[in-house]
Length: 309
Picture (cartoon, rainbow, N blue to C red):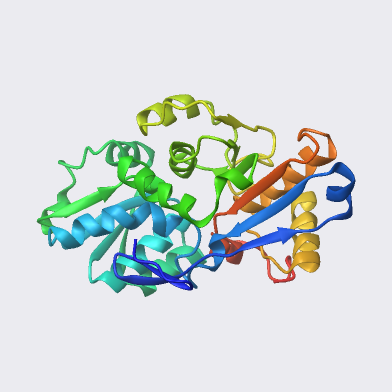
């Protein structure tokens, strides 16, 4: 990955090198813990967070083999769909987004963004969506219009996505941290970070309720290491669910630290980390790194003025 002091490139796209910010709270000092946050939300205006890292090797394969189309999957508020649409347009690759569920009367801000960046949207009922997720695309009539294409699983899940996520570890020194915390959706980023760390314990915070197959996912992604743990209980009811406590926490966090969080992933993780610290989960002198996985575009689905940013 070509990299200078301030920028690096992925598939020819220039990105800003993320910084690490220290988070100061009185009770952190009282509990004798240090908390830093890796600002992946700052790497790019539109394709921030972990998404572009997971897309890297899919994009590079398409460019190297002159494959003209990428097809991928996601829900109506998918950060992955938005990032894929933008990255493909900038790379000169056509994109198709398979959206889970029936076409709504009005499109979400995420899907509007995808259309603005020339992604073709196809809506799929649950069974068809699952079939495409498994790579069963042979019987879809409209795909005959596309001769060569790459299918990227939901959230970039797969060995190429994991490989890309591994490069996130180049932006911090794991020897400086006892714990590395990351939000979990498909577990692709979790697997990538675990693969490249040995001395730190990686804590995953699922954004989905009932995500009980992470062990199988990690093995499927080629991660047999054991230096990780899943922290359940901070999903706030499930994917893209939230309540007043979460919104209040995110607002207070922004007002205090001037760092915006998204309500789907990083907001829930940070709430969980604060709660764990208060309840003495971490040992004294623990140094904790939190990975901000971006996804701030998802906040556009919230009511106006619900958050102070």
